Image (cartoon, rainbow, N blue to C red; front, side):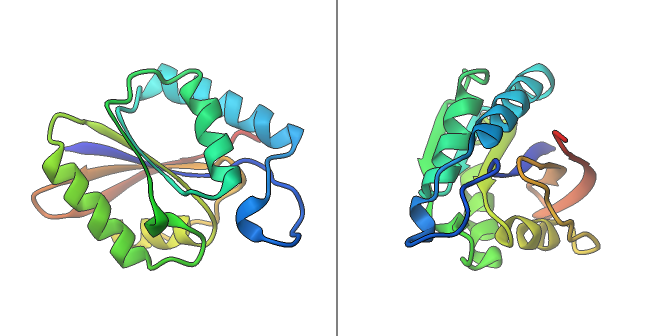
Length: 155
């Protein structure tokens, strides 16, 4: 059994020009810092997939200040806001299979794909994520299915 943590980025600037360039607000930085501490204390993730969008990258940077045991990290177009969730989960499943030494994976992405990814892994769940919310899923690499555990909110 593996742990998959699906996280929405922290609070970001209002929509402007190019969505991919939006940055975290001060609140978003504080949220990501708080969640980074929480993740380090409870999970210590070793695998990281993060959207290339600025706000997700900034969130991941804050998390990395506390979670220092990543042995695999990738910027991934498959987890941008409107990407295909099935494709994202298939890609994550392939990474889990290739990197069997990693027990805990963290995905840092956006609404709505974070909700859709949860639904792909746990068909009876589709949570609405708060900013910096983290879904915890127990993932079985044999069945390619997840078991819903919880949704953590920093608020």
